[in-house]
Length: 259
Image (cartoon, rainbow, N blue to C red; front, top):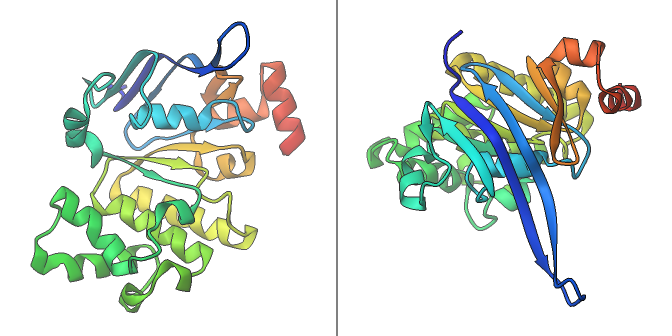
């Protein structure tokens, strides 16, 4: 087997909350000593209930949060303690699709401007190619060039999620972190977005780290999964093996309660 393109080893994150009590502070262990590898073209899922540490893990991998200990490697490069200038060289290789379009899309920018922004920041296309490239991105996610003049408020929730996906693929990444990308959408739209993500994975050769609490979504898109509980990984393996023959008590309860 080839080397993993994303390797997380013994990763931990704790938050210190200062209070007015006698103890003075409280330590919250959000992620505790987790390890996993993701291989090229894989679709790896982190699953668990709200508060289990999934999104914190995603933010650590993206270096949006500083780890307390452990290491993060991308393409064999240790990025754990890189400063922002050092991380900037890796930002376009690993992108994120957020859950809430309202927190991801500037309501004052048109769709065209939202798609041009990452192209400009990362120097993906020349100024004369911006229109052509934004048209291409819109068509790749099932929208049309006519949508460039619209604002997010003029688009549906599913359409805005397609814009977020287009922004993520605009910089031609190799890894995309999908943080509950369909959780806020109507059930009828969720399947469309999941199918789009799978099509883009094949077309662009993407690798996914998929964060979700929905085991039905996991079955649709993930090949391998890790189950998180209270900041720790309690079970990991091939998707079908974990969901159909869970070993741990927590995983059994999770599967029984959702599937």
